[in-house]
Length: 159
Image (cartoon, rainbow, N blue to C red):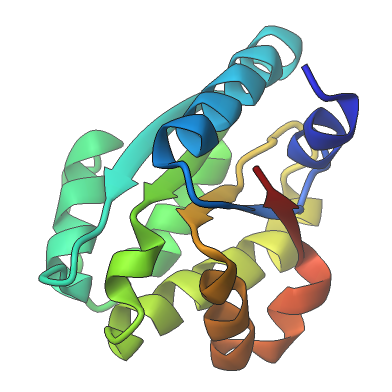
């Protein structure tokens, strides 16, 4: 295991982008580090895949189901999602980010979620919840363009 990569995973409030050509290698790196994070800090994770057909609403409903939130609230969905991820000490892994390069609405919501989780991590001192994006080198630039202050809050790791 690469200790530098795990250091980024174990940093509270630090979001992560794993990028490179081989999707399987990126996911294996994520899973290896998530396993270590779970051993050390009791985290769990949920995986969400996005496609070019994904909508903000579909993504929100899917995650509400995965984290077992009963009251579906699409207006405050991402705020509720963030709070639940922190409370449940759960890492959100989003695979296929390159698929939504042209889906500005969903991409912006995800970038805002990551920024907000970085900012609010200080209120959850025992939680290592974060967002891990799996994408390509272009993913970082697009997310940073959507929410410029995310750049200092997100580690970009080439696999």
